[in-house]
Length: 300
Image 1 (cartoon, rainbow, N blue to C red):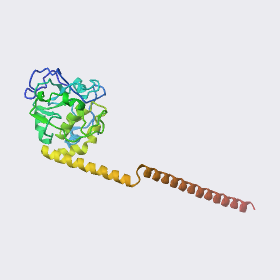
Image 2 (image 1 turned 45 degrees about the horizontal axis):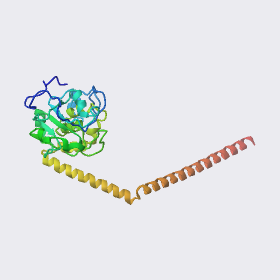
Image 3 (image 1 turned 180 degrees about the vertical axis):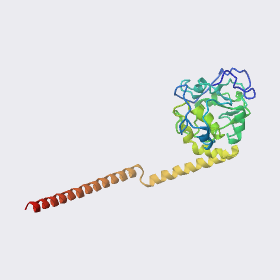
Image 4 (image 1 turned 45 degrees about the vertical axis):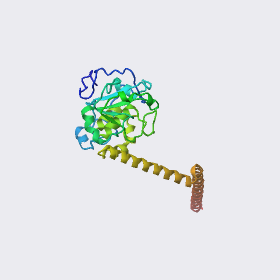
């Protein structure tokens, strides 16, 4: 997508244009699919501009599909993962992300576990003007990352989200590189950009759908504080719901209770079936008797 560094606004990235990773690099990601994967949407392709304009432009399926991202998308890659499975490396091969050197400054939003402030829709203008970057590193090797050398005035934590990548599927806050970047675009109401990145992975389309209620909730916030409060409430509500379900399951006898109910249902069903068969046989017998009496009367 990007031709050399022509995409790189001088206001967004400082340092030499060459973004080749040098000293260290990172990556808790994975990805397959061919490098020329087409963009996809849940509602299919071929949507017209008129159809898109009638939809919610900020929803997970909103906005027209795009083929490139105008704002900078970058990463500091610390080579913690298998390059063949690293989602950041794949985006780099496709020209959808720029690799930064340690010490190189990025003026957009940087998604990093070292941040103290959470991403919110209030960061949308920063992303539109200067882009978004991610620290691509292993969750198990955070202590090896020189966060002090990754320079940005806008470091952000991601709010609560659920991973859908093959390595950490279903785990809260274990997003890989492409999921983190897509999450930032979705939260800041830029679904087309998030959709483009995720479309390069066979599992990518599941991320916005599994996280739709979180994304839509965050989009309604106006500050990092609101996002934090909302996330805490939603996580607590989810915990209480799971506890209630667990309690109800236990009170109903747990697994044994479920098996007993299944057996009773099966026995009851078999009994009903047997009764139905008996009734059918009785009806057939009566019908044959009626037919026989008719024949006897006619022939006698």
